[in-house]
Length: 174
Image (cartoon, rainbow, N blue to C red):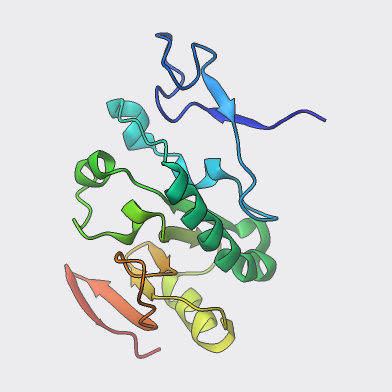
């Protein structure tokens, strides 16, 4: 059986050899859960275009396993309609996209997603009615939704359901 590979998240497949892929431009992908691979959580057009390495350290990969397991009920409910648009972000990538300095993405505890055919408000309603795993924050953002399994400090699970509009958070009334 062939080991799955992904574009090297250190050099993004650049012609110049890097220490991670030794010029192969790819590295082994990692199965985090039945439905999710590490590549789902590290891909970033911004990181690739700006040459920002986004390879997570081992402790972050362990956290991404927890996150991937928490996303399995969504995958079971919505199948391939679910797409991760932003997972792990190294600090430089988080800064490049204008992310919050205390983002759970930087710790491997959160992902932003879309579900084809369902807006973020619909996803939030589904989460409120159906989602039973431990989680920290679910946020209805313009054009996507955010799900975090732990706060950035790694300890709290606040069970917050929020809406972000115009740069301000409010409680999701759903």
